[in-house]
Amino acid sequence: MSANGQAPLKLLLLACSVVILCFLLCSERPYALTSDAGYQAWSALQYSSGNVSAINTLRLVSPNDLSKNVECPLVAWSPTGAWIFYWAFRLGVAPGVAGRWLALLAALIGAAGWAWIAWRIGLRGWWASAAVTMAALYCFRSGLNEHIGTEDYLVYAVAPWLLEAAFRLAP
Image (cartoon, rainbow, N blue to C red; front, side):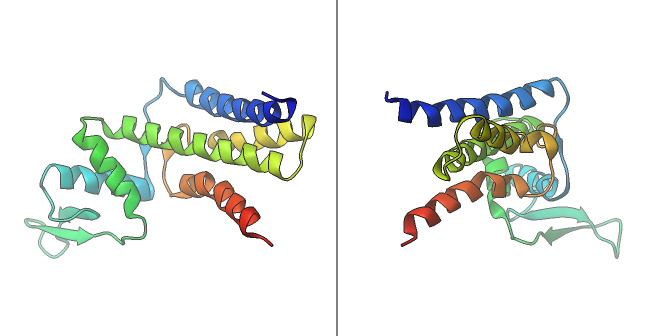
């Protein structure tokens, strides 16, 4: 491999190492599913066990009659999370484990993308290493290594690749 090709590989390894280290630091703690991701996981769990008729739906107690249950559809702004959790539950994976693996996968995809963008915009040497380290530490700063709440981790994973597409499409 040429010296030019080794630098992006080193940045990729640095980014992925930082992400993995952040997740390993909290690996003994239970993983929390809160907010949006928690509701998606809960709906997927109910759907996989046949308790609701559609994904992104929850069976809750009726506020008008506490002796009855009602199905409450969730806003379908991010159906991907619910489906990912659904397939994880079908494979027998526990909710916290599924959330942790989903977060780790998104963090690694994002870290790789930000490493590529740092290289793409011309950062070299210590500047590139610092930029990649700070971008990879997103999972630690946001608490992604301990819990999933909102869908910000998907933005982190997708954004650098959208930037790359924009670079390629630019005249």
